Image (cartoon, rainbow, N blue to C red; front, side, top):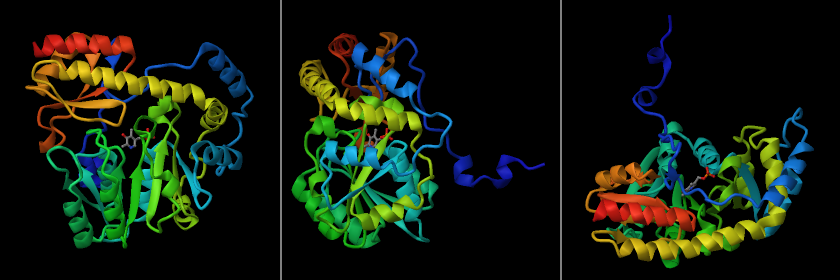
Length: 356
Ligand SMILES: *Cc1c(COP(=O)(O)O)cnc(C)c1O
């Protein structure tokens, strides 16, 4: 009899699955979801649109109309092609797989988005995390040194960074791109609707840069759609490792429909940016809380005791993310997703109790 222990990789056996806590009955402010739903009329129209979708057919592997619409709507430069992923998580996984030559490496600032490291490890890439400065700005000297030492296949820069919210300095990013002549620099703009700054218009300018986006934080986390813009040289290669039908028909139809109504999602993002500023001021006024500047739809906050804060908020039925164990630089830090005005008011009230 075969057991999993006989054949599964030892590092996989030693892992635990990506933790997603049960949020039933809680105010969910742990995963950077958009708190708003679609207007009822628009949701009904979308329902009709989806009713016309042929569920019996495989999805188009390279849906040209949808790709053209994404290029137009998102301002992808003419020099660039677009590759779709089942969330940007899948794009990260595809890039890791395609680059996994023996001895290949991936480099990213830490603390950063955990999937860069997870995907690297799954694909047998060595992952090298380069610590940020204590104020969570980029340590560009250290990152450039790591790139020169390791000549990694992939260099990830989240712009802005998760879980810190930091928007790295543009001049530092230029330095990294210039230093990474033997690497591909992946600029991850998952939070672009909240940062309102982007490298996408310049994606065609460099031989070694691709820009990744997702609709998840914009209000469509449920449909799982990420996209990547880069020159055809890169997109053609990564497309070879894409599972042939990776974007399902309902996701394609939903994206196609909602890209004609982006104004609604953009207005929600604007509302959340205003809420982010209100929430940051309210939390900063609480005793013992240090709020770090954020260009995302979340705030990183240092508190006297992250575990106590997390547990106390749970008793107030508010779910946040305790990131304090992710990296030493995040000691006693929690991450708060910006919610609706009412959710944020409840969050602040609960934090007041926790930090009194
Ligand atoms: C949330 C997040 C993603 C994941 O996006 P999906 O499209 O939902 O897979 C990618 N990068 C960063 C930095 C994120 O925070």
